[in-house]
Length: 337
Image (tube, rainbow, N blue to C red; front, side):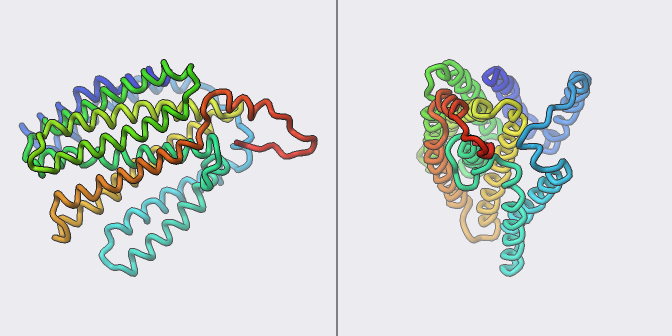
């Protein structure tokens, strides 16, 4: 099922970037964003009746530890804190930037621990480390992808359509990686697949960064980003499976929410930090090519760190079975992995 969901990206991934590039070349980039609105509205209206038929989800032990109001307040604090952290990267005044970063970190860290599995901030083995790995792959992948078209178009002088081709290549290999992990999941090599995925993302970043060299063909960007897409397909889909497998009955909703939260945060912070670095080129601190190269270097470091974190996710389903089947001493509090 996870592989099937990932395959839904194939057609949009093939058509979308290339079409967006063509529209930008022929008309204007604003039309790309305006053109997204009608399909989203149509799909939303088509799906809503089916979603409305679903009953309310049962409350779980994890969810029941905090009220809905408290969890909503935590989510708001996290959103405000994340905004302040990202805003600090663009504030010209050093004292204000430090204050914004400190306040944002205080709000974000204080709230996110209530929205993640216990032990996530200390990289506990199993599900907690899995959710942190989700942040890492999203950070490194999307923090790089945001600047692949910029590399192709502004640094190397390629067309916007060619920049879109690189993104399309990654979308296809992402789906292919998802199908590969679906076939390999039965072999009980979950940890190996997540680690391999993170390493492939790093390798894809390295190959894509080679396009910054004037002697390198621009199409290498598409090949490199296809490698990263394959890694994302392996790691993302396997982490989704691990998160669900390592959840006690009734905790699947909590795990899914934590998964999506960290994926969204990783995407936002990767693109945001990368954007702040590239902005140095606008003020003359760096030329564009070295600025993008620095971004690629940061994202490569994150991909390698994520590969290290992935060594703490379950090897296979047997790891979770051992946790569920271990005896619990009489009177001992229930422990969430």
